[in-house]
Image 1: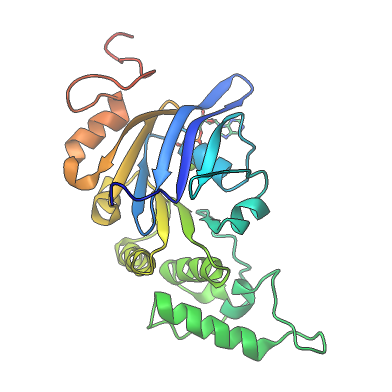
Image 2: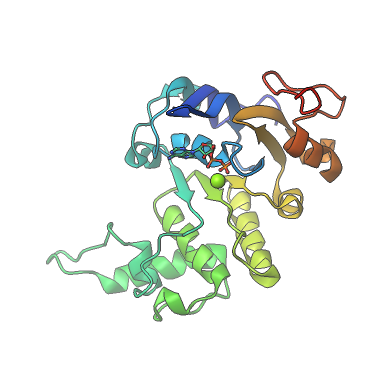
Amino acid sequence: METQQPLVQMRGVYKHFGGVRAVEDMSIDIRQGEVLGLLGHNGAGKSTLIKILSGAYPIDSGEILIGGEKATIETPRDAKAYGIETIYQTLALADNLATPANIFFGREILTRFGALDEAAMEHATIGVMKRLNPNFKNFHDAVSKLSGGQRQAVAIARTLQFNARIIIMDEPTAALGPHETQMVADLIRNLKNEGIAIVMISHDLHDVFDLADRITVMKNGRHVWTGPVADTDKDEVLQMIILGKLPDGSYAPGIVSEDAA
Ligand SMILES: Nc1ncnc2c1ncn2[C@@H]1O[C@H](COP(=O)(O)OP(=O)(O)O)[C@@H](O)[C@H]1O
Ligand SMILES: [Mg+2]
């Protein structure tokens, strides 16, 4: 695993909004079939970093490599062409439409006469949902009737249908109860088993320790630490999140000690 070429490398990434330095000299690797947990306080720069990867924000400087080659990602369409899909907390579902219409929203299958091919879309939907959640049966109700976990499954299915290789999930369990959170955890495990890489942004240490293979901690827009979950524990990670302090008591480059302030 250690020598495997990362699927994605972001290197030396900077992004500011006016005077706000949202992301500074930030680097991450994303490997095939891993769950990478991206952790940090509110305002640490997590969403900004992944919005650069998903083409929502242009990069100020730094580079993105995909499969070792320099990539240009300027729009969400560019990111999708590389198989990078992002699911935001809002999920962006069309509430009044059923699951197949949501999965194919904007990318509908048409018959050779130019009409919507409902049968083909339903068939494909059943196939993709089966990969994620074999118990999912509700293909005809509007998605507003579905549970939070099922709605997540629909949002994920939409990315899979269009060949996602990397799925970025921004706070996937933030609005969910324990049972629903468990459902989303199962979805994530199924994706991982298919070799899909998942970047999971979360402030919930428990979820991250449960699901992630590796974690990256950010603070004040900067990189604090990256490593296997097995190499650390929740107390250490909490200290990294809050103080930017590494387990050996030192600070990552650019992180100012709170003690000194
Ligand atoms: N579109 C934006 N315009 C101005 N400032 C922004 C914008 N997006 C994020 N920021 C600022 O950038 C910093 C990082 O935010 P964000 O990436 O959302 O952090 P996180 O996702 O870790 O909570 C914050 O100070 C935030 O206020
Ligand atoms: Mg955020």
